[in-house]
Length: 161
Image (cartoon, rainbow, N blue to C red; front, side):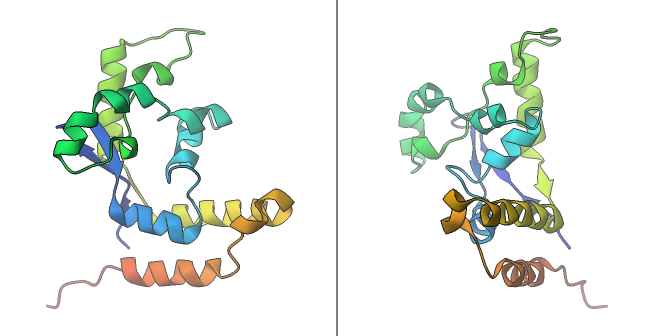
């Protein structure tokens, strides 16, 4: 099964957007909070709620508004890496801000995840939604059927010999 690319880098605005395919999967499987990558930020940032803010840099988006408009994009949809969000000053930083920024750009440019991982995260969130009344509207009763549909769509068919 092929993997799902998560981000698309736009050098013209030095920012990322979520790929259409991942956005569609995330919406269908219930992985979207205020962005479809909030859960990933938590994992990247020591698996805590601080990580949900890894793309909370609204001033950086505002600075890119004119360039985004020229590309036909809404600047608020841009995901801009702020290297300072990836260091906490407790025992470092060990690298320069520039190197951290370059590192995270390269990591995100190449980030592809399996449907198995995405499905497991969706199952986990769905289970938490079942356990918490305030998340009741986020429950997806047919989640397993949705996962099966995505599995069929992402199946790689080998070339005929």
